[in-house]
Structure formats: structure tokens, C-alpha cells
Length: 250
Ligand code: ADP
Ligand code: MG
Image (cartoon, rainbow, N blue to C red):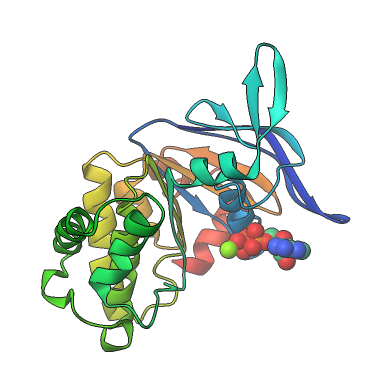
């Protein structure tokens, strides 16, 4: 579903990604860990077509990000094509960014109705089903300000799922939450994983990564330092940088 080979990205002279190799198979969960500034968010943004890759190859579901093939030639994607591909990828951020003047239900219905042209009755039925899936069936009529941070984040997950993505990206989805609200959000993500959703999750929740991830990737300063079975990478790391990081977050 995601295949990166030597992916490079720089902002002016700042090299942020220095050749990332990473593969996420369909139905798998990949947890990305690493210190602040190591390039994790930038890498997710590349996968989601929010940043242009400067070198190497990055493909999502077999399609090169930023390019399409015609015969043996590569063509840059037009804006409309990028938008189309982005619809197939759900993204959940640290800050939930719900529309404050929409209820939970309206937040989940918005993209299917406005972007995908689904009729309101169908969108509403699907949104209610999704809110139930994230444990918020009884909060459909609440506005974001009336919900806890954890509930808002679960609405944000339901909103991303409403577009029926083939891949879900999470960028530190629980980092902004009070500790007692983290568990409910992780439970929803655990459920998604066991339903077979392909997920790339940037997180510092080591317990979640060990339990749910098929692969754990430790990044530092724009490179993959160590990757593989989470029990190995997070339980018995080989690299000093991984050990030092884990001793700080555990
Ligand atoms: P992480 O998510 O691992 O904390 P980021 O991908 O956010 O790391 O950032 C990696 C580096 O790239 C940091 O040094 C950050 O300051 C820099 N960076 C991120 N976005 C931009 C941008 N739009 N312009 C310039 N520098 C950026
Ligand atoms: Mg980040």
C-alpha cells in the first residue's frame, strides 16, 4: 500500500528526509517513532500529497506519488488528480480541526456530501454508523465545544473514515489529549486495525505500537535508524539512538 525507496525531502538547504526506505503492506499497521524534528510528519505529508518528494520513489497502492505513468513516460499529476488521490487517504492530526459550527454528525457527513456528492440521507445513515463505531452514537447532535478532546478526536477519525479511505494516516493522534482520554482513542484505532485497515501511525504510545503494529520504524534526523518487528525494535533495539529514545519516552 505504501512503498518508499530513498525518499528525500528538503526545505531550502535543510534536508528533512535523507533517503527513507519503508514498505507497508495492505492491511498492516506501521508505527513511526522518533524524536521531534526527525521528519515523521513530513513523511506522512509526502504520502498524503501535501508535500512534494524531491528524490527517490514513493508509491501509494502502486501509484507513484506526484506522477502517473503513460507507457514508459512519467507525467506530473494535475491538481484535480492529486485531489482525487487524496480522497482515498484519511488523515488524523494531533489537533482535531473539527468544524466548530457543525455537530458531530454534520462534521462526519460534510465531505461525503460536499466532495463525493453522496445524498444527505445516505451520508447521514453512514455517519451515524461511523459515530457508533467510534463509540459516540449518543453524541451525534453535540457540537465540538460540547465534547471532550478524546471524543473530538474520535469524531475526527469517523470523519476521515466517511470517505472510505484505503489508507489511514495518524500524526500523533493522542499527543494533545489528557492522559485519561487516550485509551478510548487507542481502542478505536485498535478496532480499525483488527478490521484490516492499512494504517501508518506516528505515535509515542509504545504499548500501542508493541501490541498493534506489524512493523515499528524508528526515525532520527531524516533517516530510518531501525525497523522491523515491534517486539524487537521496541523491546530489544540494536541501535544506540533507538535505545536512548526509548529510555526517554518509557
Ligand atoms: P517530526 O514530525 O518528526 O517532529 P517534522 O517532519 O515536523 O518532524 O519536521 C522535520 C524538520 O523539518 C524540522 O526541522 C522542521 O523544523 C522542518 N520543517 C517541517 N516543515 C517545514 C516547512 N514547511 N518549512 C521549513 N522547514 C520545515
Ligand atoms: Mg510531527
